[in-house]
Amino acid sequence: MVSAGGSQDAPFALVDITDENLAVVANWHRPSFSAVYGDYRSPKVQRVDVGDTVQINIWETGSGGLYTVPGIDRTTPGSRISSIPDQVVARDGSINVPYAGRIRVAGKTPPEIEELIVQGLEGKTADPQAMVTLTRNVSHSVTVTGDVTNGALVPLNPKGDRLLDVIAQTGGIRAPVHEAFITVSREGTSLTVPMQAILANTQENIYVRPADVITVFRAPQSFTAVGATGQNAVIPFDASGLTLEEAMGKAGGLIDHRADPRGVFVLRYEPTTLVRGYADVPPHLLHYGNVVPVAYRLDIGDPVSLFRARRFAMRDKDILYVSTAPISELEKVFRLVGQLSAPGIAAYNVSR
Image (cartoon, rainbow, N blue to C red):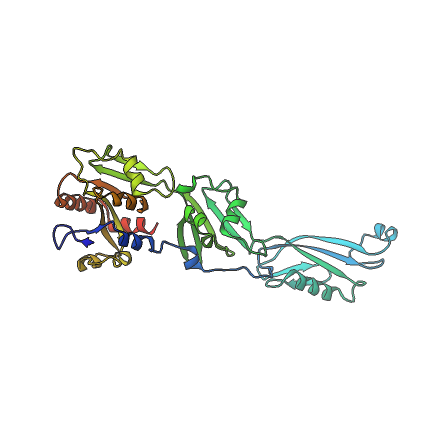
């Protein structure tokens, strides 16, 4: 059942907590990394780019090589190895190899760079061989910051790294899991998902992409209990997955001589697209904006409702209201909430 309170122009939708409406809420798509960013996989071949650091080792056969020290050259048989100090790939995408000159390496793999070095040394030394190692991978790194043990620029492995892999490389998060949120910023788009959602759904543990910025922050979750409850207070979530049943218990239960058993409400702003899934929603509420004020009603006089309360998930900044009077009193409460909560702030809370 869905209604609009006591009048057609009431400021909220009244939604009974039924099995059908519980299914609507359960099937609602929360913010999702996998849906927004897709199943990105890193290239199997890693290429060098501007800002990366490479190390070069060169082998020469016989004596009189370009890179050998004269004293050592006379006493050491066989091939000689020489190491060129680490070089950062310049803005023009090149590095300098003595006797081979400037070599453009940006966009090339280490084996391709080795081949270019050998070509540059041919005819100048006997049977040159080169080995190129990528020692500092800046262009294929992600930034991890926020409420982690050690924020860092984390280089990515050629096999690819998932979101929790790179966070673990910084020492892990410092916030409790149920209060931790992760924001991934990529190519002008940012999305925030609860840490608990990533742990519950492995598809949310996406592969990160070079230049991603990963921010971990702590956001304590709470709900407000008002009306005929054991205590009227702002009550923190002390675990993830808090249900309406547990919320009533944390609020000290219902006051027997005051509470209306048919008047247990959860007040929140819901996305308009979700509210469209309920039957008989007053049309004027669907044009309220991106969010719609909703009062979910539970009749605990029906024993089945207690099982439904166990399936109804509370959200951050929900209001648990237990009435002592007819539905008209709820309209007054919701009008007050509407005056105190700007629609922009409400939309922000819904998006989180």
